[in-house]
Structure formats: structure tokens, C-alpha cells
Image (cartoon, rainbow, N blue to C red; front, top):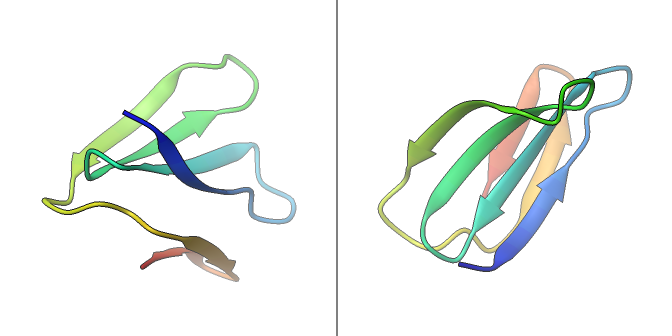
Length: 57
């Protein structure tokens, strides 16, 4: 698995990551632990942050 994209929304303590195995994860920047994981079924190529969250492509 290779991380293909990360996003850190402004003012958030959460980091989003997307991987070549089709997994998107939400990380807690304070604890370093994964708070949520979702299998998207296809490789994540890029990520961008918006005011309300994160968009995957």
C-alpha cells in the first residue's frame, strides 16, 4: 500500500489520507491513531480539502 494523497483541513486536528489500495483514512493528529477507515473500491489519486471536509479523486 502506498499513500497517494493527504489533506489537512485548516484549523482541524484531523488528517485525511488516501492509498493505492483504495482505502481512505481519517487520522487524529493528537494521538496519531486512525479514527475511521473506508474501502472505496478503487485507488485514490488525489485529495483536496474544502470548508466542510475532504474530496477524493
